[in-house]
Each structure stands twice: as C-alpha cells, then as structure tokens.
Length: 337
Image (cartoon, rainbow, N blue to C red):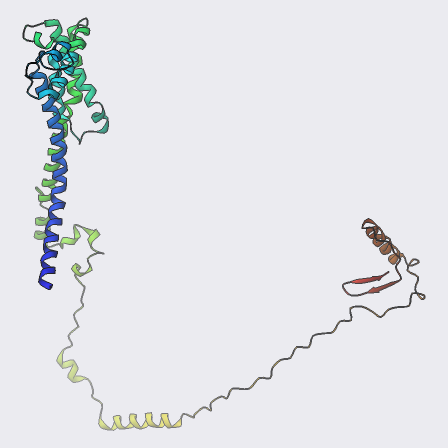
C-alpha cells in the first residue's frame, strides 16, 4: 500500500506541474485559435463569394445549384452580408482581425474594430471610384463604398491610414516593447559591463562594502574584529616574585579566623499583630419629642417660614393638616401632623 500511495502522489505531482505549465499556454492558444478561425472564415467567405449561392439574395435562394462558397452555407450568408456592405474590401475585416493584441492598452482594444471598419470603408470608397471589372463581382465597394465616392481621395486615404495605425500599428509597437524589455532583463541578469567586483577584489575590499544594506542582514559574512593577546617576555615573567609556602599558610589562617569570628544573627520571629477593631459612632438622629404645649411653632420665625413653605408644597398635592410636633436631626427634620 505504501508503494501504491507513493506512486499515486508522484503521478498527482507530475500532472499538477504539467497543468500549471500548460494552462497559460492552452488559454493563449485557445484565444488565438478563436480569433484566427473567425478571421479566416470571414476572409474566405468574402473571397469565394458567388451571387448564385443560397443567401439573403432572392435569386440565390430560389436556385437549386450547389453552394460554391468554400465555407459552405454559413459562409455564403456571411459573405453575402459583408459583400453587400463593403464589397471586396470586406475581406480586410477578417485579415486585420488577426492583428488584435491582448497586451495593447484597453483603449486601443476598444477602438480596434472601429478602426478595422474605417479601413474597409476607405478601401471600399476607392474601389467604387475606380469601378474595375475585377471587382464588379463583389459590387466594387458595396453599399458603404458607393456612399463615400463623393469624398475626395485624400480623405479616403487618411481614413485608411488612421484605421491601419489604430488596428495594426499597435501590434509592432507592443512586440518591440516586449523585445526590448526581455533584452534589458537579460542584460541586467548577466551584469554586462559591470567591473565593480573586479575592482573590489584588486583593492582588497570586502564585497559587502559595495552593498551596505546587506551588512545588518548577513552578520555571518561580516569579519569579526579579534584582538590578539599581548605577549609578555619570558624574562619579565621569571623576575616576578613567587609567593612562599609560609605566606600561603598565613593567609589561610586569617581567612578561617575571619569566618569563625562572624557572629550569627538570631532569626527574627514574626510578631503577631492584634486585629484592629473599628467602633462606629452612634448618632442620635432625632431628639426626643417635645410636648406641643411647651413650644409654639407659629411664634418662632425660623419655624414659621419652614411651616409656611411646607404647607404650600402639601397644598399643591392636595394634602391639608396642622403641624403638632417638629424633631430636628443632623440630616432629616421630622414634621408630625
């Protein structure tokens, strides 16, 4: 099973690679084939036109003779329509259709067909003016050519030139542009005439100096600066005094004494903290009731104003009564009715 799976995967990869390569080529060939077949069909339909063929012509439709057109019955009908309009110049509609380029600007692609029709109309006008016996079979320049015979020849020639430039002229321009673009890319890829590498090698400079942008991205190619250790002469090393055994023993005794003399600090015990108790103050909101007989609220000026305001507010709500007791508090004053 493993071998079969590998074989299937290999075949799938081969076919996927071929499809990636062939799909663009097939699409281009298909587009070119459609345009070329249409152009060849129109051209041969016009060139092999015969008035006796079965077509839109009434005489041809009543005739029982075989179709002489090379493209058969469809070609006979198409040739009859094109010849009736443009005459022999209708064959140019098919020939110039082969020069349509997909790489041309969008505006050029839009005006391609009007330019082709202008060329056919200009040639048809000239053929109608000449009225040669060779073109009599094709009605010279057709209906449009006969209408343009009143125009001067210079105008017809200008119409033909403008149509050729708009339809065919862009093909060589686009082809030359592609040629020069490919030529420039190949020259830039080969680095023709670039001797900077040789100069850098001759001068002993690193290659990364030419491209400073590569220095931060390629740190492995940057030469690291290493400092060589200084060499000390052997005579100076021999002259340095060497510590004796007695001095080593004295230093060891001093270190052990220092370690033993350090007092040990006692560990601090965590002290237990007593919880803090908050005692909220008690507020006596209202004082004790004062007998109504001892206090006259109407004689007190402050209380009189308050009672009048309270009476007016309660009157708005439809409440009527008489204050018999008042209790003052820090926030609220209690009125008893």
